[in-house]
Length: 530
Image 1 (spheres, rainbow, N blue to C red):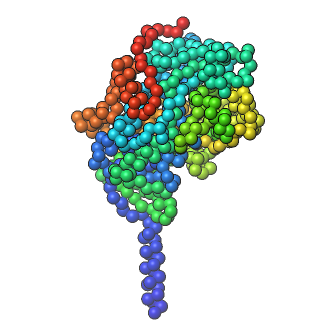
Image 2: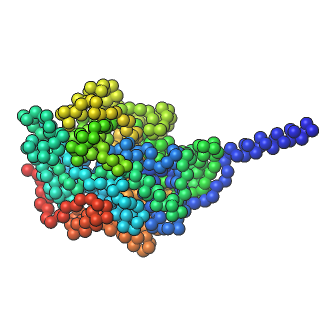
Image 3: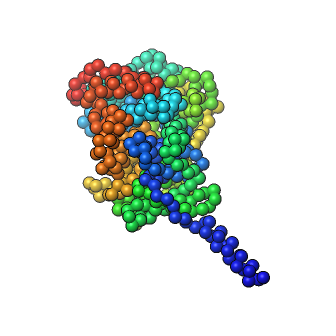
């Protein structure tokens, strides 16, 4: 009797352990880590190129699009360099560099092309759930800034894609554009603004849900929420064994994948390191958090209809450029100001305080320390932002909305970003890099996206780079070439050099997405700004 009881107990214990241990999984073509805008954009593009491709996406939270893609965790700007001054720096000789602005603008056009294709084929939409026309404006204060903005305007007049931009340094004219910003302002204050009506506001969280639903409902992609990818191991045949933890049932399982994309926001860096691919060595990350002031007064919200971007403080990251923004979130008009930057050692909004120290390793400790030493102004800026009082936040808001009152605004936590730290090829020192970077294995079996802004706006062009690096043989086939040009008509071409094509594409995007466009007739010759 006793012997039988012991045997039964052993069976129960072994059975319980079997439930908890890793189980051998199936093999799929693609595993996507993270349920954000990047992963589901890539999934939709691959599905269009090869509908027979098998895909599984793993998201550690209980729904997709809850971290950086969430409408409350990003600026919601269709980043096209129409109003963001950090994309048009003033050079030492006084000229304005428009190279980055044109590049960003073309990248956003590519995103709109793909969204238009999906809307036109009834795969996502209606478009107003995720994109709405919203004028983009730049607004500056002070004589030097006014001179800069005028030079920027004149430089952009020579770029076809910026057709329709207006400039004014007249307070009455600017008041017609943005009365909330001008009401109560000192009449003697020198101000200037640019305005262009082809701008947009984008709810990337809603778009992420649309893109996910398109694939899940049609059975083209399996989605596993409350599942966290914890590790990777290279199989002998070159595929990857992906280890996943079911967070609800505390079960670890595995799946084999021919290709792995890591698009997990701030969690991408530590996961990339676990692949042990040589290309991942030397990368580090610096987390930056943010906060919004959100208007709670419907009467004030109704008075503003624009995204108004200012000039960044010295040493501040691009994501902290101040802006007073009209937003459409879940069908409701909102008004946000910020973001105010801060520091948290978390790599995700839903991360842990150990994320930053745990990211240090033998290969990245030197570049991370060097980047820290070279970015003392950024550290000083973040410390100042962390200790801001409510009155100081209000004072910052009043630079853009002079009659703002504290009772009309609530403080809301924004998203968490991890800026890329890497070794500069020229100096061989660690540098802090703003923007995004795609890291791929030499054989194309793994790709990971690091970095932040402009991120979501340029998701399609970024994922094109992933496809070009990781599916280069397939992309050369007539089938894929034909399909990709159907999805993105401008693929392989520069819109800034092809005005007829730019007009055709912008008109189509306008019709499909319900946004504004301005026909390009002629453009001034590209000579130096006087």
